[in-house]
Image (cartoon, rainbow, N blue to C red; front, side, top):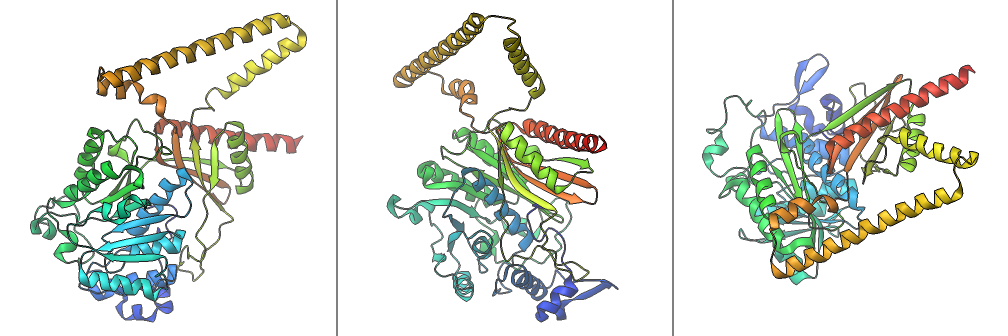
Length: 492
């Protein structure tokens, strides 16, 4: 579950029903202090989704029980991941495409309410289309969200109006299955737990020819033509094997700017895949789909939020690490606690994005020591100014020679390209590293609990996961050293 997800913890159903009375008749008492609902009952599931949307996000929903009823936590995970992807490029005036928006049009409504994103939502089903339009209208967002009725063979490029429009991202929750046998679970592994919730979706919402693999593969084909007309192409996936197949296809097509993640809600696991052609997005060397959810955690005793923020700012400035605060969505409830207290406090937390273009922190002590030794030598006149000049001149000559050689390599490469006299695979393999712009882009969640501060570094994308692990350890040591130094100064 994404750390910024307001529904990452189970809400108090009893308290929730007091704010939205229509949920009360669906409550089931599990024990004295705990209530739940029958997730196999479409009416109860619809009431819960509507209640969560209203109480947490002030969204009024109409949900027909003969169409797919969305579970909000999983949808929120997807939206927050897209926010992570967009955070690297610092985009403004965001406008997204929701392919197959459904009757609820929940992605578009949440996207605007959380982040102020504008949307175009497409839909093929008549009832879903009409209901989605009403949901947008009833929430007074018709000027921000446009619902478009499309045919079954609709193409993404039809939205681009002959190339005059571009979009920040596209997203979709495609039909997972390719047959009714898959839908009823006849092909489901016995090792997998059965779903806890009822499926109210129509066959057209969950079944498509070729399944999700063909559906998303067609988006990849279109993206090769549209290129930068969409900043990020994204999709949620329900079958992990599909992720491997699509990654292989992107690699064959020469698309290297790829990010993947994993979404979890209870027993349900989904995967996210995204790719881009934008120059501002870094080219990635590796995508490890075996372990797509990566978090590196450091905990420091006796630390506080205040001195953690100070060390974070100092490390960012000293080592040229970009640190940008992650804004919280105004008016969104963070949780409904069982004790009846609405927890919207932020004083004990820091959320930010941390981005490094190169490893500037490794052996930092050694570099500082050498710099100081050089300054000391100059101050004590252990060698004459001419020696310093000769050293600098030699370094400059080496620098000039290096770039001269690089320029000749570039000229030779261009000549090979013009004459088609080169091995394309070998060229990509040998030259991919020089185009990397991002060592890692991560989301950092810092939380203070009693006498301890915990820092969770969440990998988003980049060229080196291990570098994020090293930086997390480095930051933890910097914070620990600051605590020791503070105690030493206070004792003196």
